[in-house]
Length: 605
Image (cartoon, rainbow, N blue to C red; front, side, top):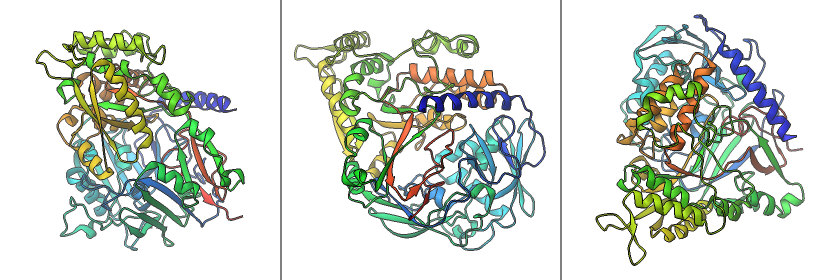
């Protein structure tokens, strides 16, 4: 049944992209905008196709998080804000439908206007749009928000702001942004920028971490909280947007609460004890073997599997190439070879989860592992061939361990290390030509028990190469601080990928992140080829160019050997109390931001 579901989704997605890319954009105000072609939903749509417009209102959902928070401003680099705060308390000009690769519909804005070249975008605000304090959302608020976020906000906002040549208020409720760069995604990116209240920040330093939450126009406001323990988001009974078609069947719960714990294992125990009402399980073996506690057996807890058709993304140990010993691709490949995925996967998940083969695997955007680039992919990569790591064009695939000892992998790793100038001395220690031993640290977050177990198994395997790896665990606030400053050797990295990759790819892999703090380029890659592929996908007007450029980027990332990949799942596993319900129609993206708690509801009966 699930395989049939995926086949339908993949077929529909391919047909959608083919049809959509053939339709030119028109320069007139619209109710929505798609990255390619036209929105699937008409101007008079009733609700999103995966929302239940008749869902009852009320009830609550309680999540568990490991770690803590020390700030209520999620839009700056300093501090650690609670998970979910931005999406629950603030709104954007446009909102995303997760049943389409990348299509936005009006939320704060009643219309969006751009030309065929997408050289500008103009938004017209809804007259009824209001902040949670009852004040109207104005064009001045939009202009101030975009300028503030783009200049002193989190670095993730900077790239798009630098592409704006002029911003101007063009009417009582309209604002236009004119671009200085060819980038077809920019109108959509700006449509997803949070809008904050300008008056709140007069005379205040927006960049300072604070427990004063930004005033937003979203469905929830912050209720009670204790830093390090919990935070409650309470439904605003006067939420201005509750009757918008885009919001029908969404944000149905009266309260969304996050409880914080020091360890991921404790979070699961809290769920078993009834303190939490929903829990996402990422371990296939645990899902099959450990959900036999009384609440599950009685039916009070339901196990739901939510399929999806999105790319696998990347999840694994990332190597910081700012460190000299990780700068050589041969060393990185040797460390990948030493990682016995098959044994670790069997130990942790029972072998039930497939390995991530590339950053966009499990989708039409993924490269074909082990096969050479051909056609348009090859054409895009050829100008950079001399500087690309081996396998980028010829074909690269992750190694497969033949047995528990991984003898073949270890032998191949030793050979590569020798080629890179690392040899084992008489005491079994791996050293370079200067006699310096090969040692590095794996930095992880306290309580990340599964990843810590993987790291310990990996450390043992590295000893056979004469490598002395250590493990350091720190709290979540320290982890944020150190990864923002790239102060680590190796750490755990997760990057989720969409069916419509765009400007975020620059934030993930762009060369500016090699030195500028706060980017998501944890590996420190500096690849003109990758940046060229990103530029191509951003301005692609045909399916051929778009898919080829993403696949080429996938090759550059994967053959760069920056990450030791773990596994992924083709569906999400969510255990929840039986009163929590979700629609029978699922979006293409499955369990993704925009699904839980957005379209869930509580049925006390």
